[in-house]
Length: 324
Image (cartoon, rainbow, N blue to C red):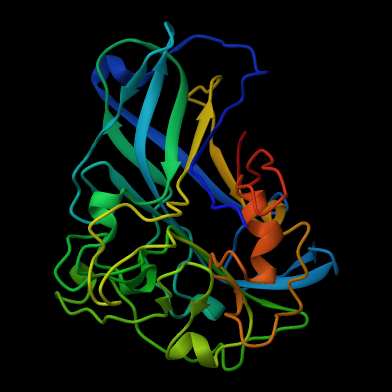
């Protein structure tokens, strides 16, 4: 099968309309929203007509990392957004967006949410925005125990070798319910929220990147998960960081050429990603759902929906992000 590659996916067909951002004051905020088939994500809410079986799902987690945010100037230049270093959600050029609130089926999450990326750019007229879903290689393989927030969140980490989950969406489905949703299986708070303590938890990624063997809690859980991250990360062991780039970085760069920061919102709709997948079934002896394994049947259509080519299947435009 062909390796997945990083893609830049734009909205070239949209007319470019210039606007003046809040950059005159130096500060801007890029707003995000999480949806399921056009409906706002709410912990505990059920969403119908999902995937090929028109399943009903109940989300239990919805978080993702965004990096390398730039605003596109009227002249077509990409101007990096200097992120506010807030000590919690944003570090260097990376930000964590978190839409679960730790209640109901999201009980294994955190009460705090974050739906925007804040930073500054030079004064100017900007017509669009560009960002990458994922963690840059130089930040992806840090030790989660001592890493700065938000890279110290164990729920978003596989191991040193594989690095972080770029996107983590967990759900119960009609055919794959999640047992004991009322009780937390593992507590996974940010270090700054629990006084500095943190747990190294989660599954492990096989070196070949062709499959994922999920350890501990994920092995026991049913449900259906979508965890996107780098694969094919060669290292001496799972507890050793790779020295060279992973074979499949699985970074997704998205460009909206017509985007007004004062009115537009970036929408991440997992329902669109799952539209051609049976979320009520899972292949025996594979991770629950899709953990980015190239040979995992549940990943075939999901990775394509992220914009990657799989085997002889050509890439299609990414389906997760849109603007409104």
